[in-house]
Image 1 (tube, rainbow, N blue to C red):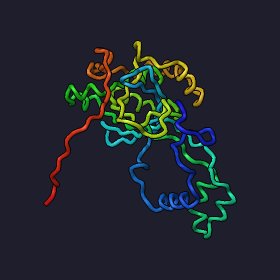
Image 2: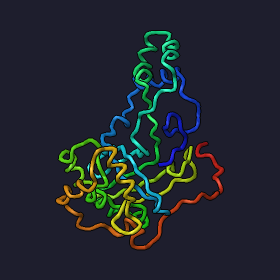
Image 3: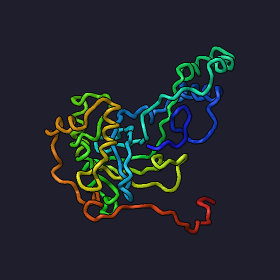
Image 4: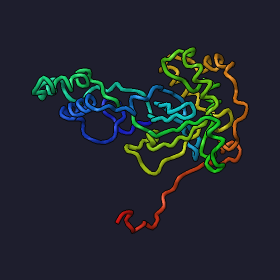
Length: 273
């Protein structure tokens, strides 16, 4: 994906490097707050997504998923899972600014290691079971995509987790549908989230839905895996009995969906006395 901005070869939004004081504040807040929603993210899923209005634009995506129940997952989607950039604050400056032992302990874990996450939050995906999907209105179903091909083809993976461990989850996901909104188009070089959200589609085994082989090779090399080998290993994962044609709407109708922004008269009455 194209770099939005660079420091030490990593994508970042524009802005000055984080100060020692900010690192200490962040570490202290992390220690004192529960951050429960974040801690409930229990899966990292790597796959590929295509822009609904321009399927020649294809990106590698990293979904950090929380399962709310057996029929619903919600995912924060990042453009990578990398966190390897060196800290911009020199170690001697860091030590000099840690005036107390407490300050040192709060900041040391993040600063001495020199590791800062540069993955950018690219969007959000909601995943529902086939049962819930069938209950949606037809116009809503048009915005969703199926997951069966991603699973069976070996494109969707749980990095560093053995296949035998994730097999039951893959069998469940093969019957699900997702709605993925991209809010930060880093692949086109956007330094900040620009414009309205963009609807994304899943890979499919037909014409525009095929993923660029170079993207697959790059991803597979990074995790030392083979999508082709995973495809062969997943032959016995059951195909869904039926994939609703309202999902993956472009396959049947040759059209995508795109949000445009328009002005609208505001309500000028306050909602309270």
